[in-house]
Length: 101
Image 1: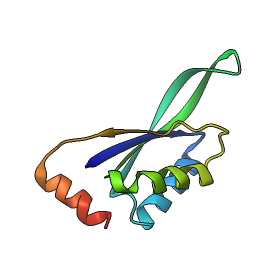
Image 2: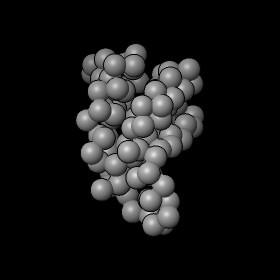
Image 3: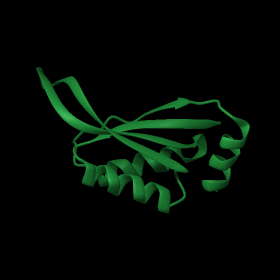
Protein backbone atom coordinates (compact mmCIF):
# COMPACT_ATOMS: atom_id res chain seq x y z
CA UNK A 1 0.00 0.00 0.00
CA UNK A 2 1.23 3.49 -0.83
CA UNK A 3 1.16 6.14 1.87
CA UNK A 4 1.75 9.79 2.49
CA UNK A 5 3.14 10.56 5.94
CA UNK A 6 2.51 14.04 7.29
CA UNK A 7 4.60 15.73 9.94
CA UNK A 8 5.68 19.26 10.78
CA UNK A 9 9.07 20.60 11.82
CA UNK A 10 10.08 23.65 13.82
CA UNK A 11 12.10 25.17 10.96
CA UNK A 12 13.49 24.48 7.49
CA UNK A 13 16.82 23.20 8.83
CA UNK A 14 15.06 20.49 10.85
CA UNK A 15 12.69 19.70 7.95
CA UNK A 16 15.61 19.29 5.53
CA UNK A 17 17.44 17.02 7.95
CA UNK A 18 14.37 14.77 8.25
CA UNK A 19 13.70 14.82 4.49
CA UNK A 20 17.28 14.04 3.50
CA UNK A 21 17.64 11.27 6.09
CA UNK A 22 14.41 9.54 5.02
CA UNK A 23 15.32 9.77 1.34
CA UNK A 24 18.94 8.68 1.81
CA UNK A 25 17.80 5.64 3.86
CA UNK A 26 15.40 4.64 1.06
CA UNK A 27 12.36 5.17 3.29
CA UNK A 28 10.89 7.98 1.18
CA UNK A 29 10.72 8.47 -2.57
CA UNK A 30 9.98 12.16 -2.20
CA UNK A 31 9.45 14.71 0.57
CA UNK A 32 7.70 17.99 -0.12
CA UNK A 33 8.30 20.82 2.37
CA UNK A 34 6.23 23.96 2.68
CA UNK A 35 5.66 26.67 5.29
CA UNK A 36 2.44 26.57 7.32
CA UNK A 37 0.93 28.34 10.29
CA UNK A 38 -0.32 25.87 12.90
CA UNK A 39 -2.84 26.58 15.65
CA UNK A 40 -2.97 23.85 18.28
CA UNK A 41 -3.70 23.12 21.92
CA UNK A 42 -0.66 22.25 24.04
CA UNK A 43 -0.58 21.87 27.81
CA UNK A 44 -3.97 23.56 28.14
CA UNK A 45 -3.12 26.64 26.06
CA UNK A 46 -3.87 27.59 22.47
CA UNK A 47 -0.60 28.07 20.58
CA UNK A 48 0.17 29.43 17.11
CA UNK A 49 3.49 28.80 15.37
CA UNK A 50 5.13 28.98 11.98
CA UNK A 51 6.23 25.49 10.99
CA UNK A 52 7.39 23.53 7.97
CA UNK A 53 5.01 20.78 6.87
CA UNK A 54 6.46 17.64 5.31
CA UNK A 55 4.59 15.39 2.90
CA UNK A 56 6.48 12.10 2.70
CA UNK A 57 5.67 9.60 -0.09
CA UNK A 58 6.43 5.98 0.71
CA UNK A 59 4.94 2.54 1.25
CA UNK A 60 3.20 1.22 4.34
CA UNK A 61 5.94 -1.32 5.04
CA UNK A 62 8.27 1.59 5.85
CA UNK A 63 5.91 3.45 8.21
CA UNK A 64 7.39 2.26 11.51
CA UNK A 65 10.94 3.09 10.45
CA UNK A 66 9.80 6.48 9.12
CA UNK A 67 8.08 7.14 12.45
CA UNK A 68 11.11 6.19 14.52
CA UNK A 69 13.46 8.19 12.26
CA UNK A 70 11.31 11.31 12.54
CA UNK A 71 11.14 10.95 16.33
CA UNK A 72 14.92 10.52 16.59
CA UNK A 73 15.61 13.70 14.58
CA UNK A 74 12.75 15.89 15.82
CA UNK A 75 12.99 18.70 18.35
CA UNK A 76 9.36 18.39 19.52
CA UNK A 77 8.35 16.35 22.54
CA UNK A 78 5.36 15.04 20.58
CA UNK A 79 5.73 15.48 16.81
CA UNK A 80 2.67 14.99 14.62
CA UNK A 81 3.19 11.83 12.59
CA UNK A 82 0.15 10.65 10.66
CA UNK A 83 -0.18 8.41 7.65
CA UNK A 84 -2.85 8.07 5.02
CA UNK A 85 -3.27 5.68 2.14
CA UNK A 86 -2.78 7.24 -1.28
CA UNK A 87 -3.81 6.24 -4.77
CA UNK A 88 -2.50 7.81 -7.93
CA UNK A 89 -1.05 7.49 -11.36
CA UNK A 90 0.32 3.94 -11.73
CA UNK A 91 3.61 5.19 -13.16
CA UNK A 92 4.12 7.52 -10.19
CA UNK A 93 3.26 4.76 -7.70
CA UNK A 94 5.67 2.43 -9.49
CA UNK A 95 8.38 5.08 -9.05
CA UNK A 96 7.61 5.29 -5.30
CA UNK A 97 7.93 1.51 -5.02
CA UNK A 98 11.22 1.46 -6.95
CA UNK A 99 12.63 4.36 -4.93
CA UNK A 100 11.90 2.82 -1.53
CA UNK A 101 13.13 -0.73 -1.95
